[in-house]
Structures are given as C-alpha cells and as structure tokens.
Image 1 (tube, rainbow over the protein chains, first blue to last red):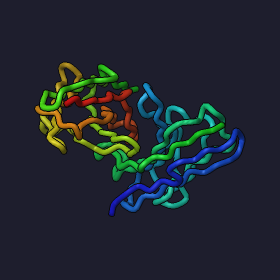
Image 2 (tube, rainbow over the protein chains, first blue to last red):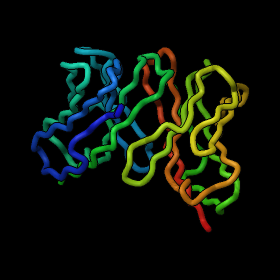
Image 3 (cartoon, each protein chain N blue to C red):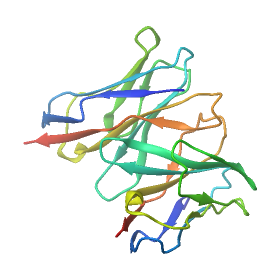
Length: 114
Length: 114
C-alpha cells in the first residue's frame, strides 16, 4: 500500500530533550515536506526537500532540523524542544516538485513539550 | 507569496442540505488548487484538485469545486450533506514556481446536524 509513515503518533517530552520524528514514504516520491498544524492557523510548512541531500526552509523553520540522506526518509529533528513547539506535525510527499499532484500525508504526530 | 482565505472557521449544515465552503486565493497567475479533508485523529486526504484542465472539478464523496479565475475563487460544494461529512476542510494552493509548496488556508470545521 502506498503510504507515508510517521512515528511516533503521540509523544510527550520535556523542554530541552532532543527528539526525532521519523517519516518514510514507499512511493519513490521526489518531494517531501514537514508541516505543523495549529488551531486557527491551518498548516504551515517547516522544511521541505526536493531530493536526496537537497533541503530548504519553509515558513516556520526555527527550532527544527531535517535531513534527507535517502530518498524514502525525511526525519524531523528538534534539538532542544520548547513548549511553543507543542503541535500536530505532518509529513507529506509528492511525486512532482512542480506541485501539480498534491501531497500524500502521514497520519500525524501529536507532540507535547512540557 | 501565495495566500489562501477560507471564509468561516465553522459551518453548520443540516443533513441533506447543501454544503458550501468558500476559498479565495491571492495569485494573479492560475495556480494549482486543492481541497483536503481531515477526519478526527487522522491525516489529510485529498478531495479534489484543479490543475488547469476543466474548471469544474469533481472529487470523492460527492464533492465538487469550481475554479473562477475572475473571482480568484475555488469554492467547494456538495448538494446533500451526510453525517459522515463532518470533518475539517482545508483549501490549498500551489504556485508552479514555488517548488511544490502548498499554502493552506486556516480550515473550516463542518458540523452536520440531523
């Protein structure tokens, strides 16, 4: 089944403790992206990647890191999480970098930083 | 940069009534346009997309949307609401020059009453 898999689904952590949210897609998609969803704000892009070793900042990159060492994987790293990073996170992938195909989304990771 | 405006953060409709969700975008160049649906505790699922073919686009679950360039709008409709349509709906736009980035609206929560 074609899908984007995120782990974990739920995570509670303490301020400053480094964490990684994994994302993997099995569709051989070129484009991958991370979004955060907050009430009343919709989804905002954190980082994106157009191919292996090619990543760039989205609209809200502060406090996050990403890497794209393999085409299928695009982990999101929070080096020192803070409470304002409490949010619902989605990984997404797309066949084309031109944006015509839309995204396939993962099921989301609900992160709480206390 | 693109922006997307969804009119109404909450919409309540009676079962069997018309569903109308409004979306306006800011681009002067026809972009790619999408509607996504998010059911509770799930990721986003693509309802339909416009990519410069027919201006009336049909999607899944009986939804359709009409692209109106003169009004920079892409409103979503369904003739007869079903209880299972209760969800949050997001309009998104992709600028062909923006490397696949989707800009999302803030979302509209749809409540269906018996």
